[in-house]
Amino acid sequence: MSETAPVLYTFRRCPYAMRARLALSASRLDIRVREVVLRDKPAAMLEASPKGTVPVLVLADGRVIDESLDVMRWALAASDPEGWLSADAAETDALIAQNDGPFKRALDRYKYPNRYEAEGAEPLANRDAGLAFLTGLSERIAANGGQLFGPAPTLADMAIFPFVRQFAHTDMDWWEEAAPAPVKAWLAAHKDSARFRAIMAKFPQWAPGGAEPALPVAG
Ligand SMILES: N[C@@H](CCC(=O)N[C@@H](CS)C(=O)NCC(=O)O)C(=O)O
Image 1: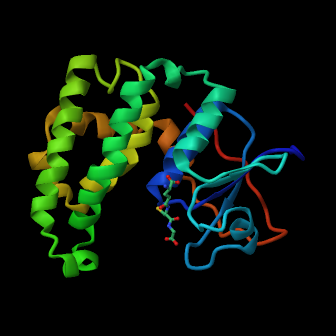
Image 2: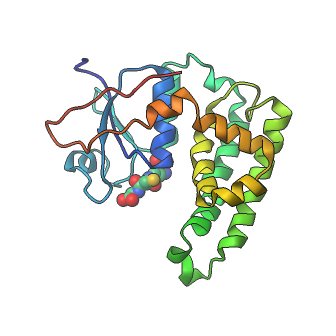
């Protein structure tokens, strides 16, 4: 048990928190987990990051990293044994920006139509918009030998697949029938990976003074 391990405020089902946990797990750094319930955020988390989103990583020296991509990049800059930073940085950034911008927007409107009724969002039009992005990913995956930038996963794969998972889970029957085969196989393999299963371990809600389990490392 390290006195100086960084602490991660996280929520198991949040795709932003998932991508942070994936990179932290791949880095094999010693990270302590504080599982958060979003409607009952701990005061210590809000003190560290008043914007109130997960993930939040608090370093031993008090520095706070409260954007998921920044957490991923911090972890991999410290330790990248699997070469996740080996892909072209500008292309990686561009692909992740499409995911976090237009694709996430379409995903929310497809998955939670009631929340966007007032703006007249059309769930199936948004599903089509999402599918157009996924078709582009699928073409890359097929051309590059299984992952977005080659045969091995890099930052972009790990930053994006938790969102594709949410999109697929909105209607699995439709996904199985309509999604292009390469992106379907890519998602299935990531969901079934030892790494993903490890970072989806269930932890009880953290309370001050409570246990801080180590983030599982796997893969
Ligand atoms: N841009 C942030 C987004 C994080 C985010 O929106 N997380 C959601 C959960 S998936 C959240 O914490 N929302 C606050 C809330 O629901 O109270 C990041 O990349 O870390």
